[in-house]
Length: 417
Image 1: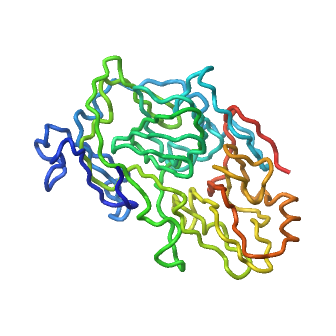
Image 2 (image 1 turned 30 degrees about the vertical axis):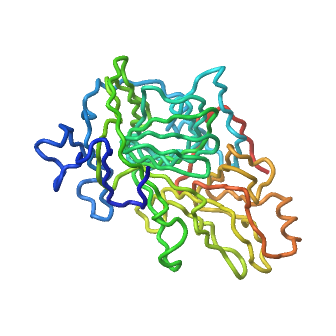
Image 3 (image 1 turned 180 degrees about the vertical axis):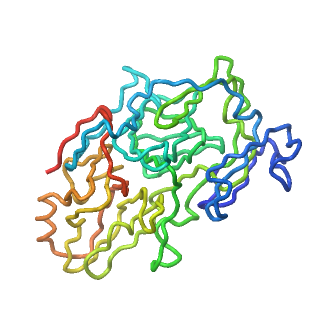
């Protein structure tokens, strides 16, 4: 079950425990059912009301009841950008290989591979881009990211994500956002792969619409937030909480499920969105607008109009512009562009750029359509046509100059021509 809206003040309680939400206050002396009140803050206490993010959770046992954190192996997760030699070339990755379950069981966390990124989690300013490739569900362990938000883009296989706020089923062509500090576990149903955009120091929000007006792009009503669901389960063998902190992984043990939240209220929640609901805006006369018109979510920097990261999609739509080269134009950009493909063939690169792979166009490095695309579209008869039918490509765009991670995973990488 889900509740609709982006950034709303939600309230939810598991129907097995009616009246679990305290009436008229956040922190009563004694909570209903003997629950513990716990606030999860996604912003400073003193943030202005429009940007103040917090939720109150009413749980069977408090999160603090755990053993100390200890370092664990980080695998292919890295933030060691300064250890990598700079490379301004256009880079392209083939689809990342998904491990076979007969060879090795790999869950969501152990299957994380850092591709590129920039900045620093300690200073709360930066991003990371990761792939996940996994074949088995997480069992008696969960993950939380103390460094920032995860925007998860499934490419192959469904994800059943259990959070402290409830459950979400996230399928390819949907996205979800797990915000900083929220604990979650991932169940999968076979070989599974997808992309992650991690942002430090800012939360995702809907872009301003300006002259577009009140409606369009990703509409707030189409975002979905999970409804309260809890499990009251003792884990005698130990439940593992994995914590990403300052770019490293730590774990601690506790003897109960962390998903013991009976009720909650607030505006700081996980959420998901179906990309098919995006209302595309496009040019209807000549030329074509910049790709910013396809922005779904943005994480703003302190500079007006400049994003730490934008999540941009290129959905099926009509192309009608007259006397115009319709595919993406040749470009040099003051932003970094990482592109991925969920399904189909990207219009500007129909060969070599495959679902489950990616490309990185670093800032001010020239890029654009391949020669075949240019010749074909320069000579085409311009009639109204469907563009990107059966396709969903996307872009993580950032004002940071990104470095490639150390051995990002089991894939091939080459320079584009």
